[in-house]
Image (cartoon, rainbow, N blue to C red; front, side, top):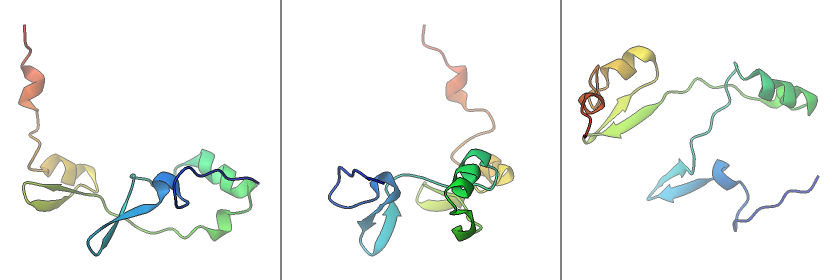
Length: 93
């Protein structure tokens, strides 16, 4: 197998970058148990048994605070969004 990498370090968007003492993902990426295509590929490559599944949460930093949006209820309660975004109702003519 040959892997080509255009950056100085391997990983592409799957690698991280530093903000002070914190390491952040360059790009949001996740593997879900519902991703049957990826699970099939992992099995074909004999890597499925090496996966370590973790429960994760998703958050958004807005208005000076971190808000969890890990499920539909939390997303609906996210204060930066109204139930109906009024900008969707305003059209410029």
